Length: 116
Picture 1 (cartoon, rainbow, N blue to C red):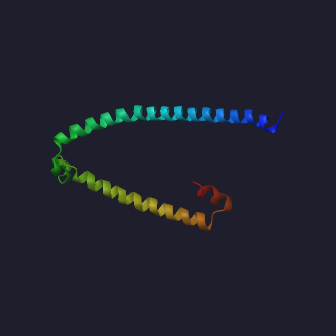
Picture 2 (cartoon, rainbow, N blue to C red):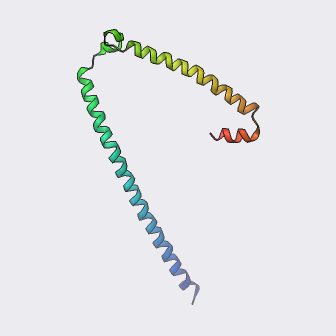
Picture 3 (cartoon, one colour):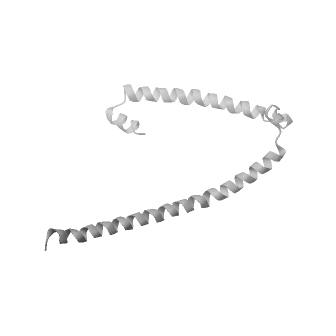
């Protein structure tokens, strides 16, 4: 047997394996897209229904009125106050942790925490 005859079955097997792999990849891609549609379609349907009902009763004065008069002004201000508190606390803790990791942490700890 010559070298050309020995190489032919190997090439054919690799080509067939590659084709099988590509077909399997296309099947899995189709299955993932179908799964995504099965999740997103009901979500879009529910969200559309909620938005449809909310638009019917929407009033711009709702944003400037207090909660005593069916408004959201207190809730909006409270959200921003909470956000500022979280930024101060989390920012301070984050900066302190960064300084510790960069300056004082043992090498093993630095390697583990920098990957996080």
